[in-house]
Structure formats: C-alpha cells, structure tokens
Amino acid sequence: METQETLNTMTINSKSTDEGLTPEEAKELHTKLNRYYRNRKQGKRKARPVLRPIGDVETIQKNLTIQKSPTDWDNLPNGSLFAVDSAGSLLFTKISNSRALCLNFMKTQPVGGASCYRIFV
Figure (tube, rainbow, N blue to C red):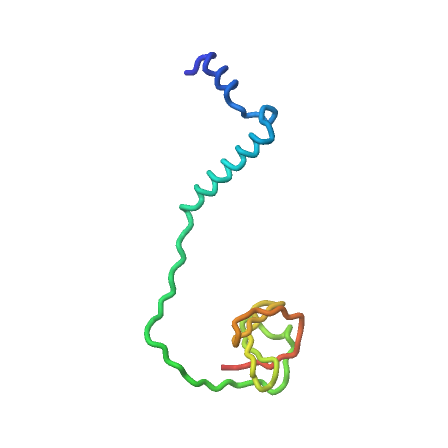
C-alpha cells in the first residue's frame, strides 16, 4: 500500500494534465508515444508469401472467340474478357463497374461506359 507521501510526490512529478504541459513538451510526448506504438505494431505484421514458379514455362497458342456484335459495358459481368475492337488487338478484363485491366500493358484504366466485344476462351 502506498503512503500519502509517495502519492503526493507522484502527482507533483507526473504531468498527467494538459494544463501542466507546454506546447513543446506536449509535442515531444506525442512523438514519443507515436514511436512507441509504431514500434509495437511492427513485430505483428505477417510476412507475405513469396510466389515461386511451379516448374518450366511453356508457351501455348490459344484461339480466342470474339463476339461479332458489341455488348454494353454495364451488361458485362466482372472478371470477363473483352476487347474494344472486333479484331481483339487490345485485351481487357472488367475489374469493377468503373475500371478495366488492360492485359497487354497490365495497367488499369477508368471506364465510364462503352460498347465492347466479349471474348471467350
């Protein structure tokens, strides 16, 4: 059990209220707390698994079937392949209602709406 003397010295020495801190001391305390919490979190992150090749890579030729009539962008389900032109020079995958992934360049692009040609593998 603590005595009255130790309680009085603890309250005098500790600056637990905001009134006793100057702006510089408050900023220093804030940075110390941020460093403490950041360092505490770092050990808890899980490492991402490394992708390893399964074996030798083989190049295959595959024929794609391209729809002759264009389809509306909104009717195309997410994850489906499509092309902007009927020749299929640039291949895309619909990611969401507003984005598509170009498979030729591996870049995402915003899409507001379009008519596109579905591709079947």
